[in-house]
Length: 143
Image (cartoon, rainbow, N blue to C red):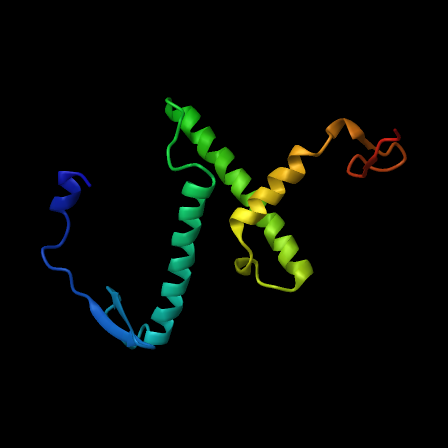
């Protein structure tokens, strides 16, 4: 935070404290009629998932340290990490749907390992486009 940003912060910060299921939640959403304690609890759960996702992206996807030097390459590095993250999450969502479980019940690290193992054993030369079908139809090449 810059000194200018800090100078624009309020001198006093008003907060609201609520208890939900034995947990104390602190919020700047002051009006109890606008947001109930149960709604705050639901928002907290969403926020928790977001924090876990960021940790997963940074640690599990080895993005805790950006290795590129130029701003343009850093943008590309971040984009590639997010693409890989979304590919694993898509795979998890597909597997969860097939297994009739919630995707959050699956381990991201295990899914990432399985995905990378599958992709490392995938031989693109053994796949061809079916000539009688659309270009989106893939089948194994005859060997």
